[in-house]
Image (cartoon, rainbow, N blue to C red):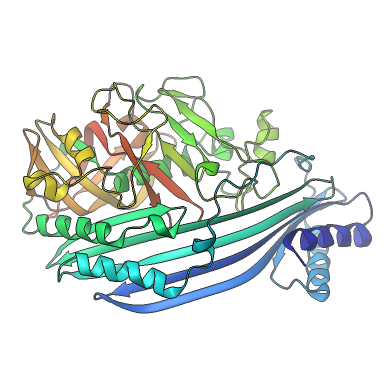
Length: 481
């Protein structure tokens, strides 16, 4: 059976076993995932999996329950339906049930590349080889992955939808002594991943990060590379633009208020890249402007949180939305327009996207700057009198969800910038910072003109941003504590 036939079969079983008044929705996803992992400059693992998953949600006699399974023959589907109906009888009443998605137009999936969908292991291995060769003898580790998903949705209200998508990603580290350099890129097509360019970038940063000095904690002007900006977008998504948290007044978001610098425009744009055109509830997915020129405009909703606030779904129904809340998963920080300060020439207001090597759209600059910064980042550094260039953040944790104060660590390279030039590597810092405050009115001094898509741990989830220059970042501890 096709995915749509399976989904229709599940809905029909609910109707037969629970009666015509039962409401049901079924999501069927066929996934082909493959990963080539390397360490110590050798491939040590190549794995692939292919399977079909079915997720069912029913609303019967005022009660709601969900179930999932991977057996798609008649016996397997019937068992899924029976145990989900049994679970519904044990659940408490659900007076906030928002109902099913009515028949709605769904646009075709924006991205599908057959060569990526059916990529062979040697095609991923070739990019790993290019990465390892490009690091020039440094120790290399990381992965190259490809994914292909096709799926269907059907519910008892007569709504159905189809989708398919592909994605490729590479994440690699080069190491020399105790110094690491990283390069990452996520793309719709495997052909867009340039292992050699990523390896050369990681190696240059690792070499330039050797023998770091320690600086005292304090507030520093910073230029954040796209990998670090991706952490900002992820945490803003989870804890700020989350419709459930907003409804519970646990989010900083105030739609209609100018909460960000006017250079900041954030768009959740699933159809820009590898994502299905519908969500777990069958609602259409579309571009959602979260922040427009500094003014907060929207938060993400599934049907339940949207009904509670009277706004409707924004296409963000997902697993866990009823407990954690619906979140954007494909946020783009739009690059600077051509005439913006720090933006330079070459990107429209819709934001530029970096080429395959994720090197900022041009050749590497010369000298010390070129060793640690692509031309786009170097342009932002040029006006920094004294500050820090930060490659990446990690191990970030929320201290205060309402103001979104985050603590975390830098990694994979930090450099002191003096008179527009990175002059020396710096040992890692701990920071404690309110992400909305750091991006607040007047706090953004420049945006790059080329966006780079950063992969998430989950395929289909990504964060896209240019480098970002901020007036201040609060570093609260150094290597000594």
